[in-house]
Image 1: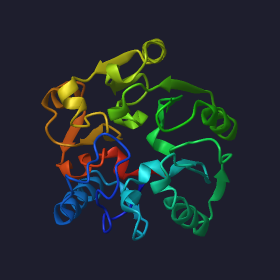
Image 2: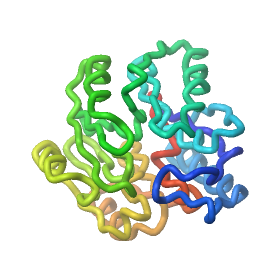
Image 3: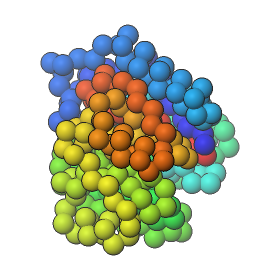
Length: 263
């Protein structure tokens, strides 16, 4: 497994584009850097995950959330079309990084919003994508044509869980964590019909971003403070690594948001 991360050098709450963000509740940059280093340390030193880095850019505080940059499929990088104007400047930096490493850069029509791995996740051989709050359902069809796979679209209904990766966490073939109130009734039915073992997360642990976890084989890395999810995962045979990520929750992100899968 190889992940792309971005140091939080310029991270901060400089605007408000989701309910988690409030400029009256700023992040502590030193603490954020420490939390980010600890997450990277768990991934590299405890799990043997290879981590590549992209240089942060001033004026783009959310570049640290690399999962939203796009989707990597084989040697192609499907670049995001961010809905919030404040994040659109990130696109050129990520495209340059992938282009310099030999990836084909694929852009969707500019009128279609798409926020990368934040809204598109694989659960075994099935692909699920969230829409309504950040990504457009029409973008799913374009991505499906590029990857030549069916994508099952899921409508998100709660602004607090604005990306699919904030409320749905695949744990491998046929198994996933999810927070049911974040989906409309049809999306819940799609999940129930396609994921045999759905594990519902309590509201208080969904708010600790239990679903925004990094899964690497039989290991799960998540924010701390999710004891019920941790116990359930350990019962299923997963090794759980909790690491504090509270400074990033202030911007509506946690472990998964801080890493883009590139291999």
